[in-house]
Image (cartoon, rainbow, N blue to C red; front, side, top):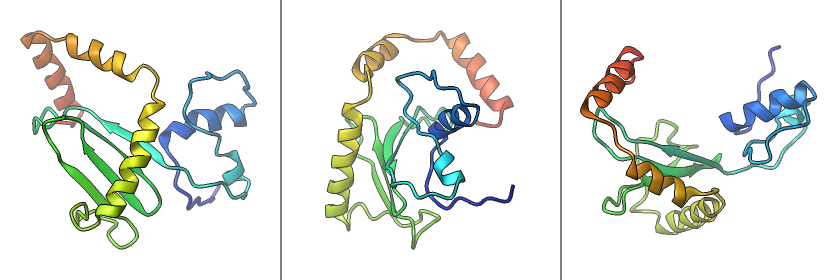
Length: 156
């Protein structure tokens, strides 16, 4: 109660943390997160890079994207090969992510891109999943049903 953790963590860490607290050792070998129990116990943990993906935004008709976050930077780009939107934000001095530094800070962009591509190499079956996903399509009626449900939830 009242514990404040200032280290960067991800939602992917919740499941392994709960399993660790409940002493459940048989967890999925493909889980990406780590237990945060050491942080809860006041120990230091090495900072990690957090990977994230977004999918299609139905309201703005934007394609999805992917990126990484460290305690200092947030870097992400569009997933489309035709669209070259790249974003880099320095979070310590710009926590509201108002100034995109991607054009000014080419060396940092290159460093973040290398980290991102290395992380993406380790995503299991990414290409297979993407191909299967692209081959599937919804009917117009199914699309409207999904959009209506998302509206009810406040996403659109």
